[in-house]
View (cartoon, helix red, strand yellow):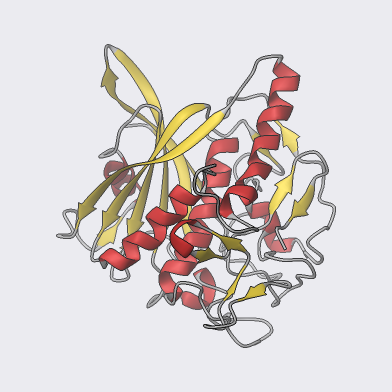
Length: 319
């Protein structure tokens, strides 16, 4: 099974240090409105049409933890019958629509994307063990549908993955799947690990103090789960990269082997005024003291990363 994979940078580390091969390690981000180098479209396909996001839960997760992620996926699509309070996850995702509008204008062909929560596959018995390789991640991802889908592998706190914490918090890629009606399709996949026990200072910042740099107090996680709220940030970032650069020739800046994508180009920026060690001016829940910048379904609150606005090549935030 051939696969192509792009590692996420350590989204939590908004510092000028490197734990990844990405060229973003030397980037010094400041204000969320910072102008980046021109964000380029490399003429390849984006994910289009109706896409199901299938969740593959590997290891032990509580039902309440699974609900945090599944509610986030559901929150990506706005529902006129059940509108979320503003600012919302659905509003945040609308920045991604700008990529499709630009691609349409370049190709003179309408392109749209509609995401929805698909199947949830639970593997609590660690069928491949507790120490996984990249190839095993692809094997787990292939358990989901392999057409019109993004398969998201989520590993629990006691599972190690090659490169986890030392060089990445997650990654996204594509792989050739099984034949469907005589045709072989590529499917997109994402992997994100729960860093709460292994490296929360790297992969769950700002809900845990970073291992390097300014030691500002950690923020209160909006769903009261440092590991899962950190996973939401990384899932959100990788989803943005997956749909706009699914096969390595979509929207990105820098070298193809280590691209800065829609969210990873804005690492560590969550609100206006962000700078290294400071996530930006965020909303605070008056009851729990939790920091967030987006509302979701079922009364959820989330922290989502800034996204590059492809029209301005600047990091766009909700707050």
